[in-house]
Length: 392
Image (cartoon, rainbow, N blue to C red; front, side, top):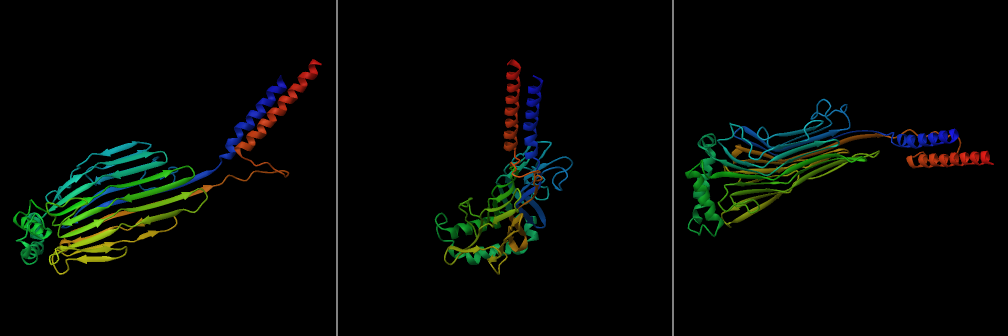
């Protein structure tokens, strides 16, 4: 009985030792993703909208600015930074929600009417995500704004009288031109009520995740729409105004698999600039390609220029350049859809097994378990033989 007990213990030790050898692999990684749906600059006052920033690291020793102390996963999301920020971390608060319609900075509230969606930040071991929902902004030409941008008001008067005036006798309900004249005249008659610009910023989302054999980072900005002098008929998806800028989605992805070089890819947003032509009463449409800068309404205070950044990617990082808009004689500046993703990972393989004499069995969890079971069988057989001999 003693011999049998010893054999069982030896077999059990080999079984338990197998996984330890098979898993002796060191993995270190850092992954980050960040997106900014829009940065708005009006008359020198700034606002950051749809901000998402997340990061994970294999341990607290890996450098990651977003996390502090023992935190290994961190997330920050806000539809309006400084208004409804949500922060989460692991260890720490696993999920945080920034409620809709966060407060505007005091200096911006006289200029804008805003409707914000909610922001959500989540963090767990090996995973972090952030989302910021849709935002709608209306810029009103308040008297203070008009005083600082006097050429803009003069430009609107010129547009109303010289360009849109000849169409005033048309049916306002059936033609874009007369509706635009009504809109421009309404802005001039009541600067504080009728919006000069409407901006719709779609959701943005970022995510980083450790999948065990692969670390990934993704960022998506779903697009935006900007309408200068929008009519009452204008809506998201069916815009109508003097100048329309439509921006599609942009994405960025980076990943690193165990023992393989990191990869990355990205897609820049699609951008289209449409300027109303009072002669044809239709829109002149200009697509804006990556790396290009296009302008509409040249020579007037309503001149609007749009540029689209290109995608820059290397082994483990990618940035999809955003859309830059300079409008209303420089009084409205927008940066939209700037996103980036990056990963850094290192996997150290387990040391090669020692083989005293070939041939050698592969040293894996399964192999060692089979060897252990074989020893158990042999030990059991030996015990049976000893017992039979003692009986005989």
